[in-house]
Image (cartoon, rainbow, N blue to C red; front, top):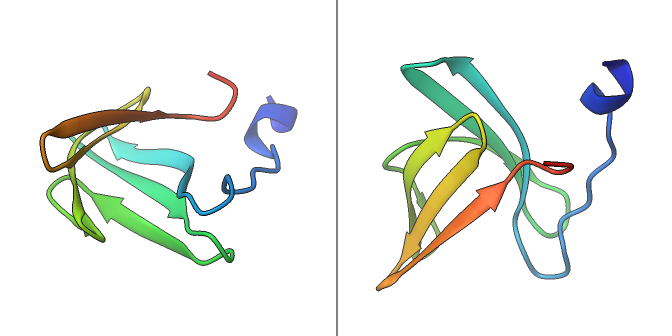
Length: 77
C-alpha cells in the first residue's frame, strides 16, 4: 500500500499529470501537476487553460477541450 501511495510521477513533457483523487464520493477533487512542477487542487467545473473539468471519479478526470473529451487516469491504473 505505501509503495502505491508514494509513487513518483512526473508530468509528461508539456502536459498536465494527475497525481491523486480525494474527497467524499459525492464531492471529489483532484490534484494535478503542471509542467515545471506546480501543483493545483481542482474540482468539477473548473478550467485548466482552455479546457474544462467535466467529471471526477475514482478512476480519474474527464476534461473537455472544444469538441474533444479526454480521460486522464491515475498513474498505475
